Length: 466
Image (cartoon, rainbow, N blue to C red; front, side):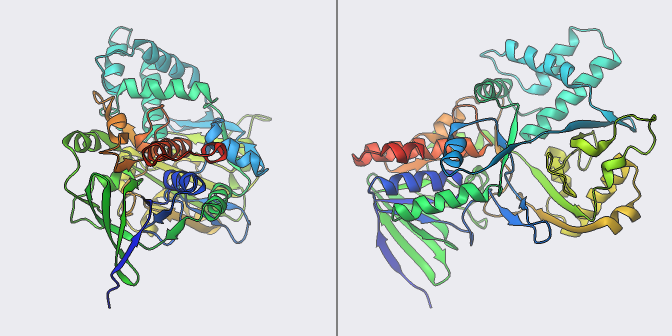
């Protein structure tokens, strides 16, 4: 039996990821009537934290690190006195079958700094920049090595195709990171659960109505009026409001109308908005977290000089592997956990495959990189955690990046339409923080301020900053 529910609110927010939570809580605490719709059975979006029952530590299936010291995240956590620890430890590399401490960072930094100083109005892709850069230098093994590692950095950190990602977008991100000590990484004590719980309290304080398992199918709009049709457990729900804030991931906006989770706008979005959606790219990532019986890598590498460094203090492990090129530990905590990171083409090879296949490939990768037999690794493996964000109908990718030649796409995507349709989410961030939780939070606050201005209400100081 279908339920035809008609409810009015001042604002309907679609999507309960970081941007939606940020905006909804700010608007609710400003006195507006807010309904927050979420397709999943949980809030958080691409923040998805589980608790490992044996180790009693958070396992992140989505966002994990706090990149730098962004006030959007730090102010919230510090106000609640959440303990934050810095990621610390040794970086190890596997190259041409040899494993040892990494020594490529300075050469990669030279390339990135050159890219930063050569950024220009006529944008180019990172791959094009790298070709131009190397064409002016003597071709040496060291140059080829630096180019390979720098490409690995761009694809790994940004989940980006080097032939598509724009240099100007990369440079904007580098400059934004410098402002917040973005070369440092941190974790909250209970993972991103701490942040989600803060937003839950703020939603309750603001009287925000949260409806989970509610999949928005269409948004029919005209200036000053929105009617939303959604599929919920009791049938079809219809909601009305003067304004709607859409915070779903870019991948959902890019989905075809007949795809699961896609939203149909009636009438269609303006052409410039549709162009912006097409001209931002959704990066691909597959990650897997493996829990072992013990930290088997502590005494590696197996063959080394007497008294030479072991991998006991390892934080990150970098390689050029075709499946999982990057790994990291729980450092500084000494836990038997390894996280495998497969970006870009690696993710494309793994996405849509079974969980057992992904785990098998992760074990094979560790065998290749560390020289430990697959039989021993299988014996040591206790549990694996995995989520395919590309195959998830409500994300359809990991996080966004800027395509070459389309530097204004994020700003166009973020712009309101007729003071009726508003947009937020990490893909709409215009400050160089795409792909981050703090970028999503900032975009939610920006959209909340736009809506408050249109509704002629004032966001309280705590609403904007807490």
